[in-house]
Amino acid sequence: EEVVIPDGIKEIGTNPFLDCDSLQYIEFPESCCKFGSLIFGSSIRSVVFPSKIDSIDKLSFANCTEIEEIKLPVGITSIDDHTFSGCSKLKTVINPEGVLKIGDDAFRNCTSLSSVDIPESTIILGERCFYSCKDLKSIVLPENLVKIEKNAFLGTAPSEITVKNPELEINADILPDTSRLKQIYGFSGSSAQSFAQKLGIEFIPLTAEQKITNNIAEP
Image (cartoon, rainbow, N blue to C red; front, side, top):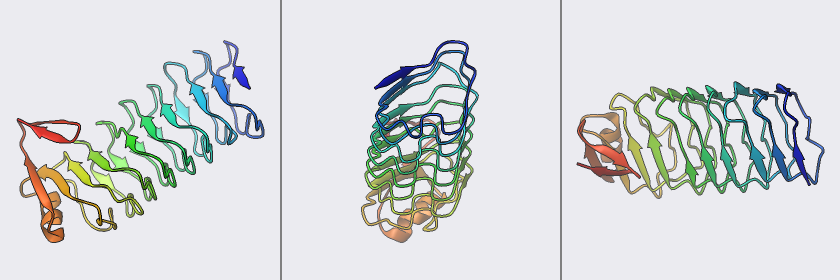
C-alpha cells in the first residue's frame, strides 16, 4: 500500500502510521516541515521527504525493518536518539550538511548498514550511535568533529578509519573492536597515529594539502 499526504499539511505527529502493517511507500508534501516520533510501522520501504524540513524526532524510524535506504533532506540539525535504531535492512543513509549532532543509539542495531555520510558539519557523535553496525567497513570522521561519546562504535569492526581533525581524541573507548582494522588515515602527531601505533596497524599520514576521496589520500 502507499500514501501520498496532501499539500498543506505542515506537521506529522506521533504514531500516525505505526499500526499500518501493509504501508510500504509514503510521500510527504513540500508544506510538511516537522515530524514526530514513531511515525512508521515496520513494513515501510520507501519515504519521500519534502526538499527541506526542520526536525525529525527520536524513534521516527525505529524498527522499520524493511527500509534499505534513507536520504534525509536539508534543514535537519540533529539526528535524534534512536532515530533509526533497529532498522536491520538499512544499508545506506545520506545525511545533509548542517547536521551538528548524531544522537545516542541513532543507528543502533542497523546491522546491514554499509554506508553512512557523517557530514562535515557534525561536531558530536552520541553514545552507541553506531552500535552493532556490523557491515560498516569504512568510517570517515569529519574535520569539524570534536567529540565522540563512549562506545560510539561498539560492536562495529571497520577495516579502515579516516580522522580529518588532528585534535580529535581516538581511543579504545570509542572503538572497542579493532579486530578487522587494517588502516588509519590521520595527521602525524595526532591521537589517531598514537592509536594506530598502539594497535600495531598501518598509519597513513595526511597533510593539509591532501584531499580525501573515498577514504584514499590523494596528493
